Length: 477
Image (cartoon, rainbow, N blue to C red):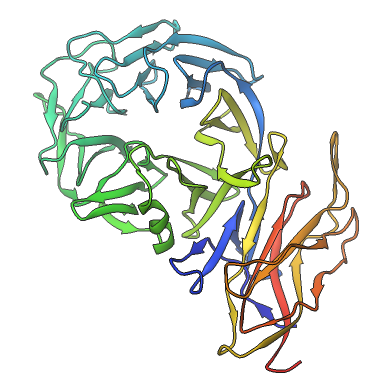
């Protein structure tokens, strides 16, 4: 039975007749040995369980420092502890919108994008103090570089610094203007002890030169002709900055730095999605799990969370399936911090912080609906009689774990010959516990000049998809 194209990214093109692939709540993984059962497979995304809950609506930011874990929920800064308990450390003056956080080893600094919204938590005394010194001009983002907190003043091209290792004080003359272009600064991001001054249309890069008048200086020749559409969709990974590009020609492309050179990583379908929406309030975070580093992008009204796998250079989708509405929506995660040996994810809509883990089988009690829409099967537009489809996958792993039970997991097959009108799902058994030789196969699947298959499952058992094999005849029965 011939193998057909199976593992791949989300790539829903402008015309479904050209490409209709989707990969939702799975991500492609590649064999590192070359001797695995196949070269590629689809791994299920991690699940969520509540770790702690704060009062208010939405987790606005998170930070880890010296093994301590902090979250801003609504108008309050909280510290969470390893056992899931928490305590309030201070109050902000705003109650919504993303905050920026960083530390200098002795102080935690928070800014909220307003002209007066800056606070310092002393990490030794836990005293929480608003920054009221004359040097503070408000800030959209704050980063740490060479002993200084570095801020960008809202709606301007000005960046400035605190006193060394003291965010409550500073010299009002310690500021500079991003001079490479007259655009406003949108945000600051640090990578490799350099600050990327990311504007509306351009990026300038500075470092701590130790200059006596003002210690931060531009790096000669380090200038990028693309800015960003969103302050909080720009983030640093281990070796690159990723951001939603904007310049005088347009926006909705996603770039990654390669040294100081921008490299496009978005695809046409990803750009098509983003072009429909206002990206000003888009947010992104990165995390590393199972040998992969993921860039997770959320934008208001975008129907799912767009996930970029940096190692494999592939896009997929993560989504929360609303059982009441029967539709996908963006993933619950709004930000990420790794602390206490756990991936902790803040909810965008409520005060819940989740632990995220590949060992979890649902999203805090809600089934995860996983979907893979395959590439087109076509043979010169001749009729194809589809006799059977078999999925090579992990079977016999029904689940009984405490109160969670799924002893007869199932997967559903649908198909469309036009890319739009899918049939009702036909059930296939993934095997009860211990049925390791069961075949996941469907027969007598009709005919068509072209076909797209779609697999969906909401089982709590671990679903690991490897390949698909189709038995079909061309032009005869």
